[in-house]
Image (tube, rainbow, N blue to C red; front, side):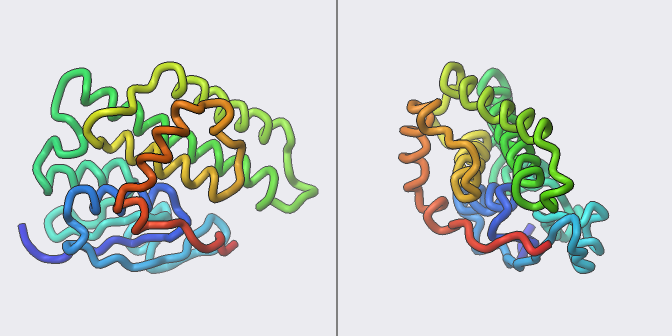
Length: 209
């Protein structure tokens, strides 16, 4: 298949950045027309809703499969388009290590977003401290798991990309720091963060509620 793909993107979304870093790593950046769209649960973006009924980015517009949404689905599509197995190993232990790491990275972002709602974004009178504490504990437990169990070296996978973009977002949003709790992970992240794909896709901007 030839031709451009359109990526609905947001420069402060960890999910969108994972897709764009993956495209860089796959050598597919010249295939993408990247269009920035601001979205939030309280600020409707009709152009995004027209393609994704959940109203969220990233969304990838494709000629043969229509609009694809959720970064997991989009990364799978790009991986297959570039040559199946480039970022998502085809089979065996390596495949499930990559997918598990991607799932953990998604969960870090989900928990971090929930913490932000209860500490910054929701009106102060409506914030619920126990929920913020519970979501923070998920971040800390995940840091401990990564430090003790995650296999982070080796060929670049979607799991590594997801983790690096998640950790970068947590730092960007000044959420509980992983560095003291997971120094091995921090050392890996500092190396990964120097990759051209990461350097070309910095976070910027604020959520427009």
